[in-house]
Length: 101
Image 1 (cartoon, rainbow, N blue to C red):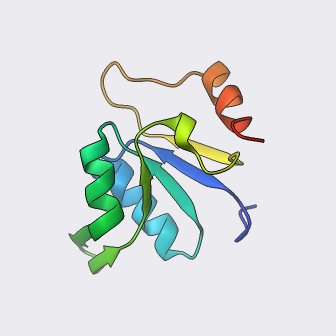
Image 2: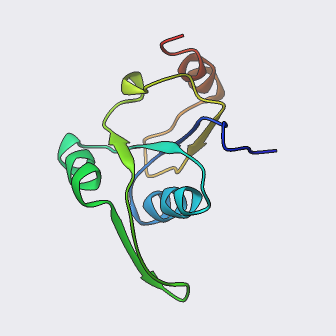
């Protein structure tokens, strides 16, 4: 069960990853989103994510980073939003969960 203390990361800041991260944050949970490019991470850190859809219009602030090695702390849950050739394996996730202990 997720609690307010659960440390979450979403890897992938495209349409699906950004929306997923934004609605997790909107639900009151804290997370970091991993972007493919620093420029996108900077935009998200400054402006947040803007979502318009059947659930209304939302501007949600997120903490964005470019690399998983930039995690601020170990994560309890890492959600991978797969895109093309970029993929994180279970072995990689185990390493990510141990970052900066």
